Image 1: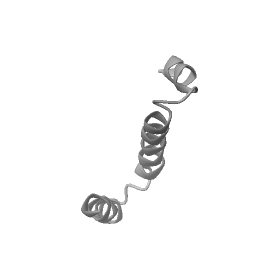
Image 2: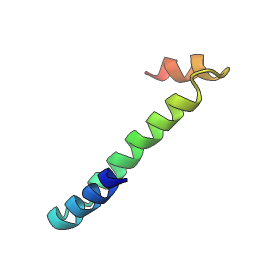
Image 3: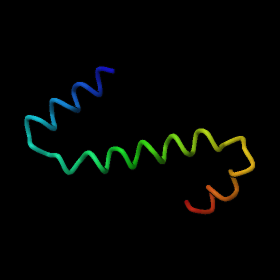
Length: 49
């Protein structure tokens, strides 16, 4: 959780609000790849990458 607070403080201090969509997209792709690793959707997800 310290990473998130540091990231938030960095964004507020540097006014880098355009980083939020990039961070959320990377987070979504990471969660998607973790949860579909052992499922039947895995071949379809891995074909994207």
